[in-house]
Image 1 (cartoon, rainbow, N blue to C red):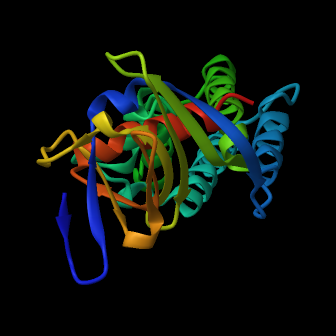
Image 2 (cartoon, rainbow, N blue to C red):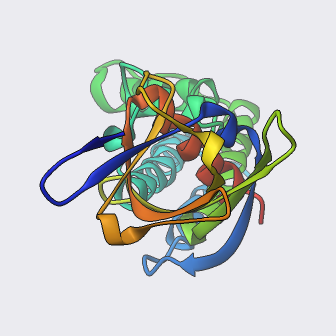
Length: 244
């Protein structure tokens, strides 16, 4: 444990983070996530015409990709993927895959075809069955992300048993705009370690926010530490948020 002028740092045993998350409450998002379904529906109706023209199919594919792109932008607005601690180098789609939100391969074919239609001079032949398959792809993507677009958990608990059999309890609240986390912890004193490693979750608190009683420590403070320590909490957040 190290002290500063007005705050202390407590180093939490990584074993405390081995428990399963359990959501406490939920928050609804204000942007209308149904708009992406309306765009998809318009494209699907075009594909479903009795005899759609090549122009109809091209327009539909572009609209399908538009529905997916709008959902991507909405999710990025809500969850600030580029600011997530421990995110993999690369695009936000790889981060979404790592968080088990969606597999980016689901969208590659649709995106590439849209780009060809938008930028290539020669006409690209399309058939109805391929466009129907792309419509299904876009539909599954929207359905898979509807919960996250509609709502997420506001805070969650993590309860774990240490090797001694004693219980540890964390309550985590994330601010998704920058992924800062507020933590209320109730842990046995043995869960506090004297030296920080990359695996330790660090809780920064004022001395008044640290209370010791009966070989246990209660802490209210902000979370810090290496991306390796913080990223498991982010995964728990998305695992719980995607359940409904």
